[in-house]
Image (tube, rainbow over all chains, first blue to last red; front, side):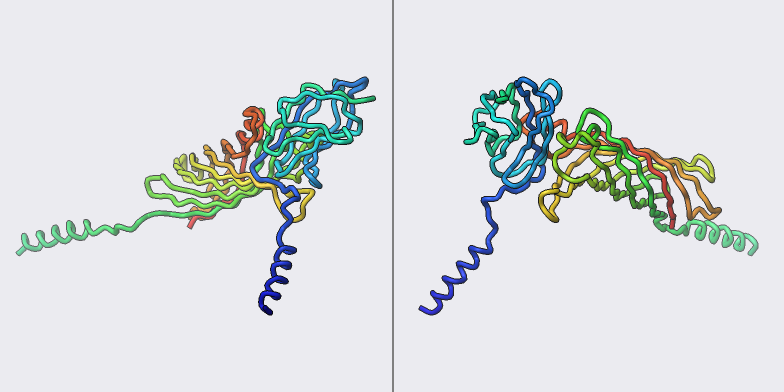
Amino acid sequence: MRTAFLSCHLLGIIFLMSPNSCQPEYRDNSRIFVEGKIISQNPANLPMKLYAGTILITETTSSLDGSFKLGGPGTTGEKELSFNKKITSFSSNENGCKLSYDSLSIYLPVDKSYFNFAQISLKQ
Amino acid sequence: MKNLLLLFLLISTFVFSQKKKYKLDVVSNIEAKVIAMKPIGNNSLAKNLEPFYGFAFGGNLMTPINFGIGVDYSMLFSNVIFGKENIYGNIGSPKLTVIDLFLTHRENISDDFKVEEMAGFSYYSQSNLYLDQDKSKYKNSGMGFNLGGKILYILDPLGYQAVFIGGKVNFYYNNIYNENPEIQKYFGRSTFLSLNMGYRFNF
């Protein structure tokens, strides 16, 4: 009875000390690459960032015609391509991409590492 | 009696002249050098990074027939070109460690000058510090082969010390994965041209 009580505590401590697997981590020997084009009234110099959880994979601003290229180290977990303007619609080479609840970002599926957005329409 | 003496003399000359020492005449040397290296082609290392600079230590074992084996351990450093961070990613500057194993051949041009050519395999390990995670590194490893040549100038009459200048071509293939083969090729392959100069000690 007494040992069972002790092991119960030990299990709790072990659980607390175990690494939190929900947090995305970097992955060696892997590269993620996202490219595309923004369709908007003035598509130049729009900032965008590529996140995986708290990790910033890479960031850039769009060129004069609205095209952009983002590359960075691969990570585990879902990636997020975020803008500072609301997205009205987008088209992608991957079906798994979906719009976030606040439509400020696009979620990229975990198991893919190359994305090509033929067009991303942003609200003015 | 005179003939016998002559016979002894002849026999002794023949016998003792055959008694040659069969010692392995392998000579060895160690060297230190500085390196400037430029990746070429349409790839990430060539387009997103500045030229690499670094240093190396090496050694050779040379047989009397002027063939030998050698090893080089190089450490090279570079920086991301300003404006290319979006393609290279939010990671620190790269450090490239190269281990070259090669066969080498020496040609004696004169007493002072010697030329060496080499060819062999290379192992590459590239690491970048993460900016968003403390004390951990992004690691890529690669394999490839190398071709090179160097000109040596012997400094002292006994031939212990030498200085050299050389060039090398390294072919780099790493194991970066991406679904798009173009992108995988862009990040995964390169050709390095390098110049090196250094000091060698023979013993």
